[in-house]
Image (cartoon, rainbow, N blue to C red):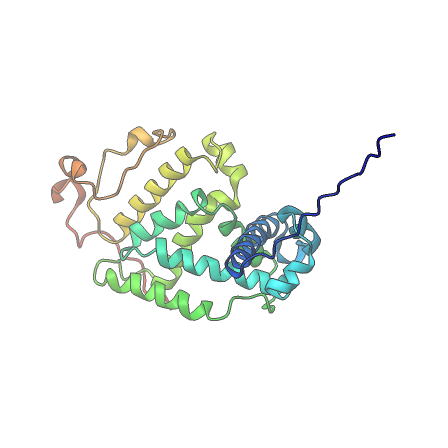
Length: 260
């Protein structure tokens, strides 16, 4: 009788090297941050749940406390990631280009403008507010205003004008239904966002003394697919209307009263 002996091969589990553990930890943190941005954008800070973020990221919810100290720490980490994005990508020195960059943010970070909108809707001055943001915003506004010294109509309050324009840059993310109803386009589409950013930059050019242009009609009410128009393009110089006889002398138009 043949005796059969079962052979069991035991495979020892290898302990990960420190570098491998670090890479795994960074991947996990990135997954949590991306899932949190989506969850906060969908439900706001108050409505987001740690369990929902963990489910999106495919991790145990205990890891959120381990890496970020809970929901508030995770929200602050998203704010820090946004500051890094600003430093790398939103460094324009003039208002038109800065606005154009902000209007195109949803192409890279669709959750960003929605997070800001949720924060405003639920504003109670809570602990989730980003430390140092007020000083950073004032510095950025001041830098852009200084870049246009002498160009801006003195009837405008620079801070109020900045708020209006940067709110306009976020409009497609906050009111996608209006974009769909008024323009017949999806607010998240690259074609619409590029055309909208282009128009917003053109508005800013005119507000800060840019040349009057008359060649924009072809994009009014329709979108040039993939348009990459940049205000001030030399190709537009032939269409500028420099003749003061047609538009009146620079000093003839009525001024807005000084804000009180």
